Image (cartoon, rainbow, N blue to C red; front, side, top):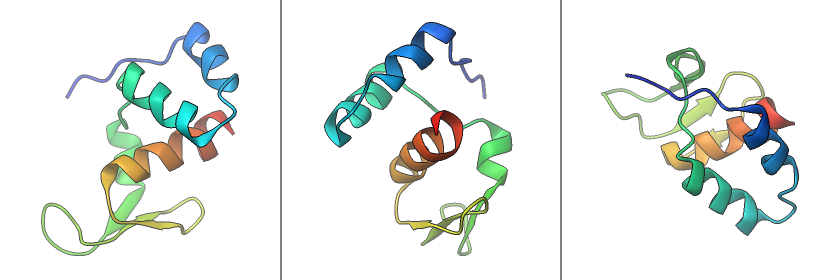
Length: 79
């Protein structure tokens, strides 16, 4: 899979997002995706799509990949 690198301009725009709605809109607008490295840090139940996803960096759990992408981007990449 080919993932776009986040540019400096996108990072500056992301840092200006102050509300949860603005952050989610930014992720959707920019089509932010996790790299294979970030996906490998996210583990969960069995099968191709696990029932529960867990962030290896902080232990937070999620029910959807969208929530994982949102969390990793804002908490570990931007934060």
